[in-house]
Length: 236
Image (cartoon, rainbow, N blue to C red; front, side, top):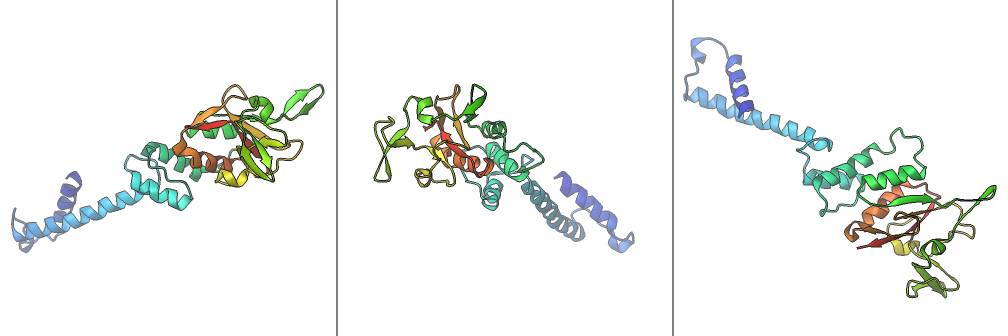
């Protein structure tokens, strides 16, 4: 009502000052000015809502605004999240890539995942050995958990144990749908691979099953294109 009253007062000030324009209270002239002021108040409110919905930086940015921005930015809409959590994801996408130079560092990926609410840690597949370095097989780190047996080119679970001719299935390379990455070859020396899981390395982190696609999408957006991730995660 404060805005409406100010608009009505301003309207009275803009009319000529002659007797013909005297505005008695509750007169037809007064009602006309009030009616015009109502439409002007709606215009002001609508303009303010446009600004509020333009950026997720205010309390008037609601779930409907979040859905619209997620559609525009190609983000996954998860209505089980709070509006504030969705706003953070939208802000992250708007700010990417920003002015952070070491974006391909594993610490950057870890920081962004944890900021998004995923309790995970990122590790490089680089281990010192003498004067050099070597890579480690994910099944060695997990004690065989997560292994699958590849039969005739098709990965099939074998009691969660690594089998001869098998490999680690839960990887992320190019696709949102994890099944499409199952047959991706990581190479013999595992160059360019990394791990995402719990702390310490080799333990599994729990991810909300309703956020599975959001989790994979965020990794795909942030990781270097040529890098392949082994996911030590359970979706619960």
